[in-house]
Length: 154
Image (cartoon, rainbow, N blue to C red; front, side, top):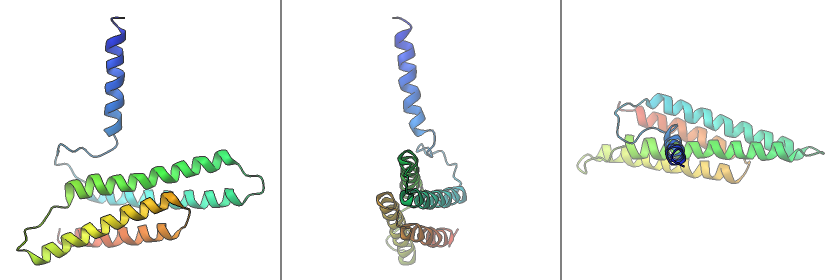
């Protein structure tokens, strides 16, 4: 019993830490790689697209493999969620800073970044709800627009 308590506490702590192991820290640590985040989102979008194509292909087969269909749906939803998490936790919470009210141009850029991030989160949500490739197209377009606005004055 004496060993059970420390082992249990370690297991609980390990699960808690593992939940945050793949997301950027919120300390803030000051270590940022914006380009890597853009590349990761692009990769997630590509994975969502491939998953949608596989779901559509497997769904049209005469002898459906429901196990594979479910696996692709889970994969699609996981990567769409990663897009939402990266945009919200990395960009919105840590990288996009509010601008002083006197800086009109800065305010407009700030609002544009917020709008693009919001729309990416919404399109990722819609990608979870369907296999319509239009959402992938929108995500790619939004990501490119966000990249341009984000790096505009850096």
